[in-house]
Length: 105
Image 1: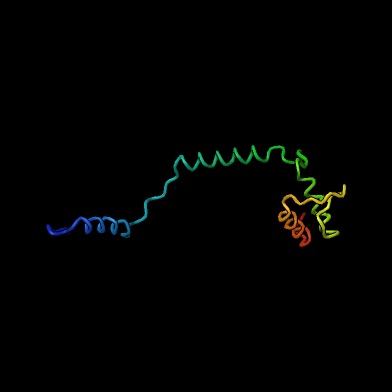
Image 2: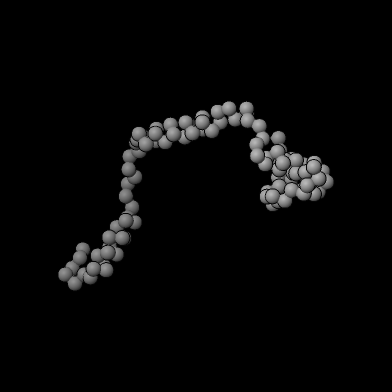
């Protein structure tokens, strides 16, 4: 394929072109990596969802929920104490839009 006059660039390009040649597909086999990945994902899901229903709202989730419902009913982000809640305001309005579209369950 290569002659004595072939340049280094031609050899490099031929090597790159050989990467794009059609080859028959390799036989499929199930390797141990698949089972290891499945076990890790399954263990992670179990740890993540274990006791999920026993936790209540924490930190600012309750204030965001109250502010969202105030936006739904009155149009302004105000807490029951009268304080205007502007933290994560874009997210709160997105949550209110979700409630208004009936996406909450």
